[in-house]
Amino acid sequence: WLMTECRDGYVLLCHLLTKRAAVYDPLTRGLHLLSPPHAEICAEDPEVAEVEFHVLTSQEDRRSLRLLCICKERRAAKVALFSADSREWQISPEAGSLQLTARGNGTLVNGCVYWASADNIHVLNTATLHFSRMDPPPHMQHSYYKGVKVGETSDGKLCVAWATDLLLKVWVWRATAAGVDNWMPDTDKSMLDEIRELEVPCLDEDPVLEVKAIIGGIVYLSAYEASSPSACWLLSFCTETEKLNKVCPITNSDFFYPYLMAWPPLLYATR
Image (tube, rainbow, N blue to C red; front, side):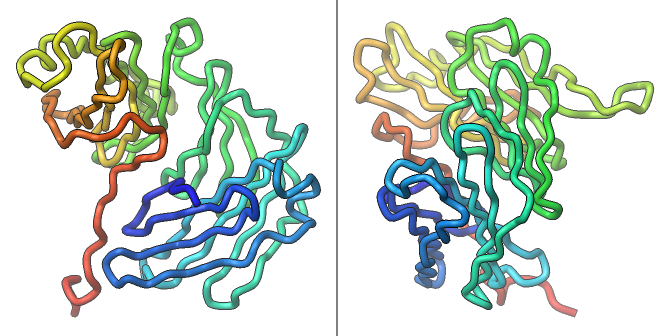
């Protein structure tokens, strides 16, 4: 089992061979163990099919969750939804033309799943299950980047971030002066001085930065020495204050995710 996502207070795990998914709530210790997707979703051998899952929750009732399954085949992507209430898969009749060059799973932001690469950004609307594409920020097309991530700003706007050497770049999808949505530069900042000011252990000589997630305007980065990638730290950068902070030491793994605990239902204001 591998952890593939942490969202809305849930931890999502996937079994590589069987393609089963499990949704765990650390707050209530509740576990939803889902049946594997039907063969109609994964026409290829389940052991080699590339499948990803995303948790969809309702703002009205967080406990009423659904699971989005995307099977990425060679020339198309098939989508299905699993309801925790009915315990059944609902298969979308339309297959999307999705030829991904980006590695890893997409990111769920404001009801859409985004896969970012140097050439374009693929989008899946989870309400309509319709695929589309959008152009990436201009400088992302011509720069070497590692770990480009999609996320949201503190006001819920779509954004992308990546690090070139120690230069952090963040672009936000906002309305221009003409009223047309487009990519706008937000952050273009070297992190070298900030890392030195933090006096992070094991980051004295040749630090490397990788963007891991963007949640609510906070960019989470892993930082490690190029000569010793096992000694790694998780850092956070606020795009509004432009302040870099230490979070905690971590192992240099691709399978760690910032987890934000959901508010218990009893702590929500009621009328």
